[in-house]
Amino acid sequence: MSTRVEQYRSAVLTTANQLTILRIVFVPVFIILLAYHEIGWALETFVAAGVTDVLDGVIARRFGQKTSIGALLDPLADKLLMTASILILSLPQMEFHNTIPRWLMILVICRDVFILLVSLIVVVMIGWRVFTPSPYGKTTTAMQVVTVLAVLYVNWRNITVPELNILFYMTGFMTAFSGLHYLIRALRRWPFNE
Image 1 (cartoon, rainbow, N blue to C red):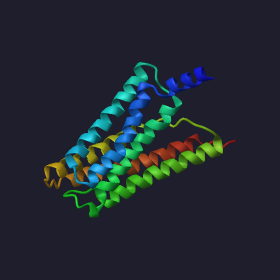
Image 2 (cartoon, helix red, strand yellow):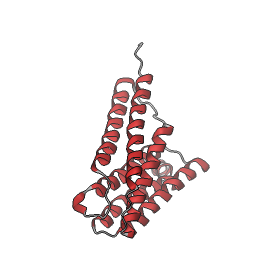
Image 3 (cartoon, rainbow, N blue to C red):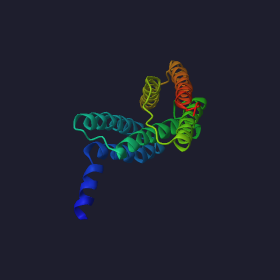
Image 4 (cartoon, rainbow, N blue to C red):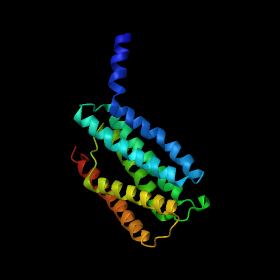
């Protein structure tokens, strides 16, 4: 029995999964740093979380450490970090020098909730499906990361950059577009003929 438990533990606690868990641990640390206006440390924590994201993917592929728990935890860690970042950086009561517009925060959260609901409906009605990220989804994630990094950086430097509005609109467009693309892709996979 103990041998089976050890085998299960070693399969779950791979190096890639440990990095993913570390990224989840970074989330409350990041939130606390922002709450106390330690912008420099928050920026470094966000970058460190991004490094662990890259590393766990490389390690999982290179050393055959892809696991079902990793497939669940990795996107969860990403969503937790991005949602927390965008939400907190959009709150006017935090009194940051530069904030993410509330409309963009609402759009990002609504898109993620919408995708989660569509995924649950598909799983309940059809059964388990693997939803691979689309190029538009990956571009949206990249745009959101760049947006958070840019807002953190200008707050850390205490400067105002009006051109950030262009980035906000670009990120908003990609967020909405990828959400619609996800819906269309889900509808195409729906077995209407059955």
